[in-house]
Length: 381
Image 1: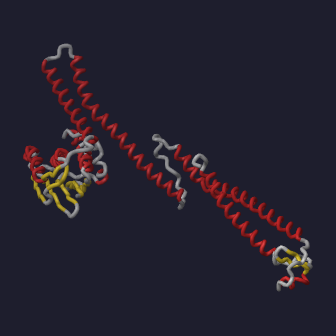
Image 2: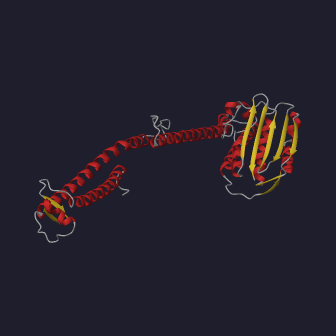
Image 3: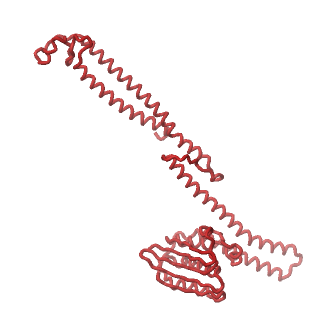
């Protein structure tokens, strides 16, 4: 059954139902007609029909009271022939109506399924090279219209996913190309100089080492995005966690005269110590990097009924509203020049989001341009 077309399947199933209904109606009509044949008067008014007998009309009362039982049968062949003709006519009508009904069902099914056929044709023409093509919306309110709209929503998601993938590949290539080009330029300078000095070698070696470290950092960050699907968890003391982070960042905090405040409402969370430390460290480090001179950083943990929150707020320059949804994308930078000077590759927030989601949590950001940003991590207990 699955090997034939949907149109033909609908036709056969509808035809079977139609045939069954017609057969029931025909049998009912035949049975009713047989009962009626036994009580009708022939057209010339001479004979009356009683069960299996035809008698003169003038003597019908003899049968009505049961006094006559052996009256001779007459004209029985006429009645039998009429019954045969009636049955034959019913069968022919049954066959005609069934065939006609199946033909009409086939035509109507074809018209009803045409939108699905057109939808299939349109879908078959869509590929990764033309994901912008959409199913025409004819304002249909039936299942076909709903299917087309759902498919367009899926295409929107696929297009965004492909665009992010292409942008990610381009950003990776650019991030790797820059230090490689710097290394290659230093080597070419040594080749051009016939008698390079020791200082030239030392300068080229230092440049090479610096860019190799940068490449290694990018590769390590990329691996962090997709590794550690399974990890060990334990209870983590948030006070000790953030005290360690602030201690590690204390030289930069003192250099930029940034004040920090820590409010500990949520004492512990369950997670991986290494991963959560890195995620929180990245957030606090960003709050330091992009804060104003003499600014302030507030770290607050809150315990709620079935969830816990970690909020990290700064008094930096903030993030434009139209870029808030993109800051967690790999290699995305709000201020590319400042990020480059700070040595970032634009992977910090991507790593934070990946780590938090692996722990079953969510991260969000609320920012006002010129006033600062607040990053909120939410854990569900």
